[in-house]
Length: 103
Image 1 (cartoon, rainbow, N blue to C red):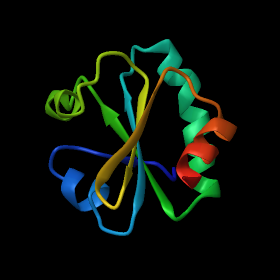
Image 2: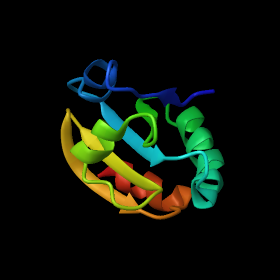
Image 3: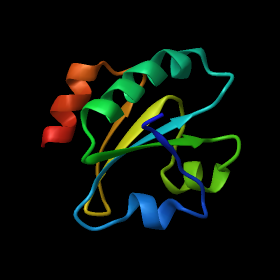
Image 4: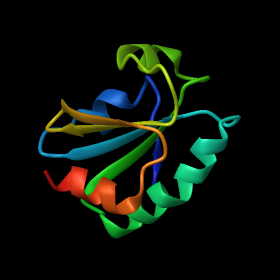
């Protein structure tokens, strides 16, 4: 898998690295739309090796979900140089994600 699992323990080193673009996927195993989003993110992670695609299970990492005020899932959050850039709520297509990551 090209995506990485993000936890409270590794969040700072993986998501806040300077000079990096990070796409965070807030999801849960019981969420059907999240299951639809997963293959898109996996493909994107393989196509864009310079972008870290991290998955955050909100059931296991509630503090991270709270930190980003996640109210529905899937929610995708883009960080650039460790700073919040954009969030997308709901299932998002690859083309829209590529465009958002290119900004």
